[in-house]
Image (cartoon, rainbow, N blue to C red):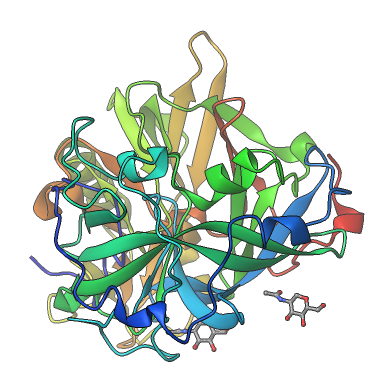
Length: 431
Ligand SMILES: *[C@@H]1O[C@H](CO)[C@@H](O)[C@H](O)[C@H]1NC(C)=O
Ligand SMILES: *[C@@H]1O[C@H](CO)[C@@H](O)[C@H](O)[C@H]1NC(C)=O
């Protein structure tokens, strides 16, 4: 299997979530000399003038699909607050930092390891329960919440759940200090393909522990997140109402899968034509750089591309290992603009119960990259080869230059065209 350097960057999904309970070695060490957060202390510092119906919090993103392979966001956390670079993941719930608990296995981090608060989330807390594999989990240490998370790309983290203070700027200029749960990850296992030097992960999934669920349960914003990933690099994520609903196409969040932002059934459309490849479930996930189709859909895509490219000046480039399938031209390409004309859009056509269809179009720019060897490579991969089985996963590459909205209150996923390099301010957002 040939994969890009960073294929599933982080957390496609929690494949299994084993119970792990250990005495947290060093857990008492930090009790001295550290600011403690008294319950209520941070809470009292957030203003009550916020109206959750209208407020939003917007963060700029840095990164790109290729060659970086991910988008990161800066969050200020702790007392005093320090900046951290976090990988943005809509495919998992927990936000955590590599943490000096002390750390057993941490990777290189852009900032010094986070020093945990001593504000433990108890084992029986609903937030802790939401991170455990079963409802009747063991609580060997009732005062602390141990967790283990295994991501689809062989990455795993062990940690302890604590409350800490997040500093957030809301769109109406108010700076919020919010006390919310944060994972202190003190033992991480990295796979070579998932390795990149970040301080932690921002979990934006649908579960209770997700940052958006926590913000919402404190009455700060509506339970809505969204993102806009620019093909020029960068973009933004938002919590709350920071999008123009007039330009958004909606499809229901699938009730079959309670963990992920998934939708379906959908049918594949190639170059505007139905393919008969249907009943597809698609998971939207910023934790994956590329898009994955199940075997059947992937084979259909390959045979369509083979037909489309016959007679065109593109030949398979087996030596280019950037992704599974690359093509070379007569001369090296420098931009997608030069090759776009040889390709047609792919689309997922969602049937919204009845006749109404919501089409998620994936133009060539959202499924191709130009490798550093000047070849054009297919950014849709075979999910079967990485163990995704029947799941189809829409990764960063295919969500570029769209505003994506995950409406947890109405159980809808939406998308619309957008210039993602324009980070919205409160003034130019219509609600
Ligand atoms: C994350 O974003 C920051 C900008 O805030 C950037 O300087 C940094 O290089 C990024 N981190 C990585 C690992 O790319
Ligand atoms: C929040 O706002 C303050 C003051 O306007 C600014 O200095 C800081 O960089 C902002 N933080 C983030 C994370 O945007």
